[in-house]
Length: 217
Image 1: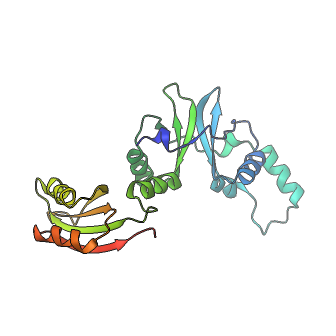
Image 2: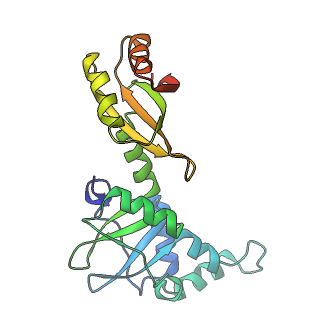
Image 3: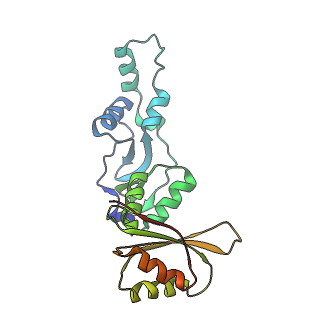
């Protein structure tokens, strides 16, 4: 899955000369938390609602509302934007986006074309939605969690057991356990009308099922 298919396309942008007040209004009106800053078609920065809050006067200020607005009207986006922007190319995968956001502690990233133009925004919400879709969480499937030893052929054998029982696997995810443990959790999602039957067939091959649930119903 690629970022280009999961991002918000044609995002709203501002220029460096845009006033902070106008940028703040735009974020509030469109219910967004960040705005890429573009100059001559290229990404030069990003401004977030946190940046605006950082420069806005304290609620305890003696300034009038008019004076506050006047102050923010005089201040430009270029003065408070983050200039070192972490972005992704539109050819990046959703996994790369998730890893970058996790490592950099970011909730969203601009997506740029090969020419450097901003063509989208990928956010943590987009990543969560992808996870939900990949795992089939909204489809009411049976979820089996197995504790397995890390060895060659495990996935193939499990797929064969399930196929022989007449079921299709909707999704399968592996998750490594504690370092050096040599064990994995495998989460399998399938549409099984007889959970006990498939459970018995899997356990007959020596695999340990540690959790069974119906999700999304």
